[in-house]
Length: 519
Image (cartoon, rainbow, N blue to C red; front, top):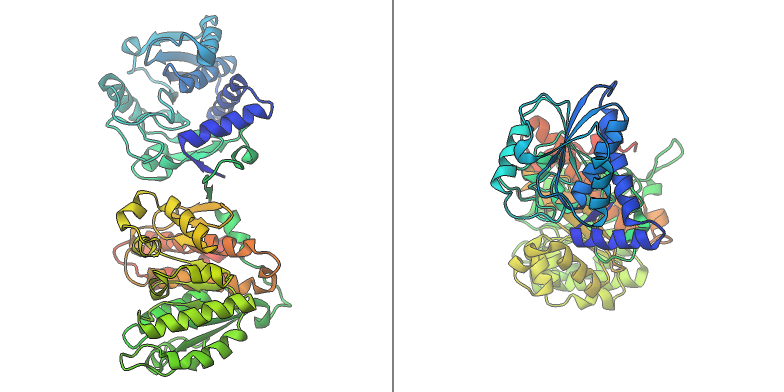
């Protein structure tokens, strides 16, 4: 399922028409889908009363189709015109059809009885092109109708909601369900619009996935099914060797927790064997509480970080690994930069996937070319500030369009980029984009990124038998990792609250998420 802006939807509609559909046919299909959804909510619709609020654009045209089809089902239909009657185009063509039906009552909004008891209220006033504030008379009407004890459905998007930002005007319609067409509109997944949509249903009206293929930057919405694709199925014949060997290079004297959370995320996400390479103090702390991990002890610098003198030992350990994670809690120094550079080039030479996070990303700032030059298959997991440093642009520029920034970094490095935030955007060098809308404010604390890196690393490692033949698995694993961690956090927040939960609490919910995935 795609997530589209109004401009992208226009292009997709044009592509659908070029494939043999017509704009009138698309409108008929949209109205039919909405009418069918309405009828599904009632044991019997005969004798029910429906109020259809229509604008003069194509959204209103959808409403005219709905009115005609509900009338055919035996429903008493009132159409309320929130604007002048449409005079041209396909909306006018659909309006002419209902004008000829004597059983359908048509009133301007100012003459509509909003106090009557309706069983069905359909909002078809403004579509995805709306932004700003609703006219006062429409806002007042929608406010009153939103409180009605009726089945309330918004068509394409609730009137008053911005389809890009998710901002809402005063009086925005509050629906029990929103039926949207072709793709979910981006703003519907953001608050406060998300709260006005109710249940979101996406109807395929002739605008299928192929209509989005040639449109740049249209994200695919992550869901349970897509996440499950990245998690290998286990059976009675599998063993630890089936799920790879992960090397985690992480931690320093003052950052042992980063290593522990990285290891926990990886172990909880399916890695067969996990080895932590770090300084003695980190290993002592992690080993005292996590028993499923093995260790490679590294000599520290005077500051307690990993010394570059360990490079030969690290390269030896790395050669025998299916996947490598590097960066969490390492610190930024000449030593850590040297270690990162050697690991990146080894991974390129040996075709070993590498996940780079936190201080590893900061060590890359100013030298991102080494990823592409090494022909290294990498996943980068930056938050907005790290993404800005890697691209040498202000953080504010990143937050203004994180998707574009992530796509740019993928283009420059040849890496998969998991741009953390809400939503998390996952981009690939070939232009694929996914977006994960799981997760909540409970993750807004230190350590969340370390757990996420561990989850992604665990998924990549678990797929190590197939990942050399199917490069798309890196993209799928990064996308699934973001979705799965966010869903674990959502489950945890329901019980513990966003304020009280910790990243490790979400990590401990991972088994419940994998159970939902059937894994």
